[in-house]
Length: 91
Image (cartoon, rainbow, N blue to C red; front, side, top):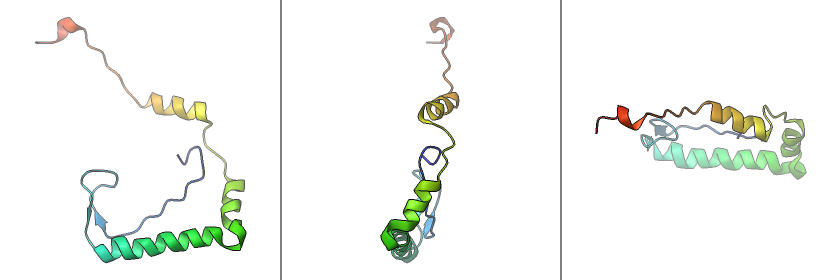
């Protein structure tokens, strides 16, 4: 999404394994939930204080890498579809 819209990614500890995978697990509950929650809350506060000045600045100064059509074309270009003739299958 960061290719199209301004995105704020927060990274914190307390987890192990591949992010966005079924291998991820909590290694430290305090770090993952309490510290992670504080980071999220303070980040939101930072963006919203002073009438949302920081958030407005990020939005106003954001320059997307792609427009929607370019993004879809780029994502499609990373997909590979291979078709095999039925007679080549050993079934």
